Length: 430
Ligand SMILES: Cc1cc2nc3c(=O)[nH]c(=O)nc-3n(C[C@H](O)[C@H](O)[C@H](O)COP(=O)(O)O)c2cc1C
Ligand code: SF4
Image (tube, rainbow, N blue to C red; front, side, top):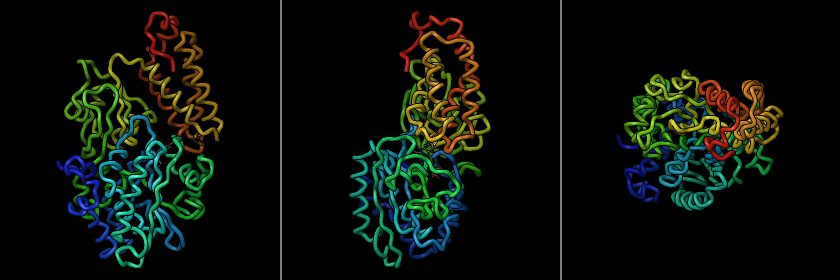
């Protein structure tokens, strides 16, 4: 199947404006602005059932439809913070086919009649951000961005903003605060970003992930029915799966949603190196529950609903694979250390919980763990779930609860044989 999202793999130099246009680029924006009303554009995206690729899978067209028409100022913000461990798809989209994102963002902006688009890039994307500014300038010169877009009377400019390397600024309300020059911490909701008072500078704002918006030109070009013919009815369309860890061919794979884990890992990505067995899968980076690599999991389709039914989340589909030699206690310790570092500290359960969990893992890995530590690993995360301002509190609980549930015997080994470290069986503590 030809790529829809990763067209840079099929068309050399598609990042260049002329090449993009020669391959049908900006026809969808032209069609939207010249032939369709904003509501018609939104309806096509609702009918296509495009779901947000940033993690939550929220229906994109519905999100656009929440923007109040009467607001004088409205914004689109592109979430290019891409900080989830194991996620590197937005980077390829921004590098390989930036005009596809610019076009998708402008179509979203037209649908809500936005006055400006801001692309929020993670701090480490500074080189990409500068290149993106050049691509936006090309689109501006072609009257596809800026004043009186394509002579329609609608004006909308586009700007790039660089973050400073904080995972929490990928969370949409922290991202908006950071864009406004405030401390990058999540906001209390409601009001939600789409509502008056909840968005950028408190105006109604759509926040969409890079990959989400990269789908939009194709949907407008080909229609909702063609889009729904890809994937499954509840999870339609193509998805980029980022594969890393113990896998023969790591990288980005664009596949229709609904392929099985087994197909992705063994048919496309070459399986597990050195003839090892696959032990566990993190389907959504560090933030979703770990899945053991059972036949039930491997044979399941990769869709939002089926991964949820397995007890995890598809999230941004950043698959970290772990082979039979992986120490699951060590792996969970790594993730907790990450969340402790990235917690913004605004909510007590997340700030304190990640700190205490990190301490417990340090004790376990140093061979000083007790049975009470294992009890605490089951108790502390449960007090963090559903009680915090943003989902980072839940994310931090996931690796702990899921590894204790599926790999309890590995934790028990640490408690029964606290001198494992001396025997050389423990990797470097975090
Ligand atoms: C702690 C945290 C970090 C997040 N990081 C990102 C990120 O790096 N990129 C992203 O697109 N969404 C991220 N999200 C999800 C965003 O809050 C938001 O749901 C998303 O940008 C919406 O876009 P979508 O509907 O197109 O998926 C994060 C959420 C949380 C709670
Ligand atoms: S859950 Fe954690 S990261 Fe999110 S707002 Fe609260 S303290 Fe900050």
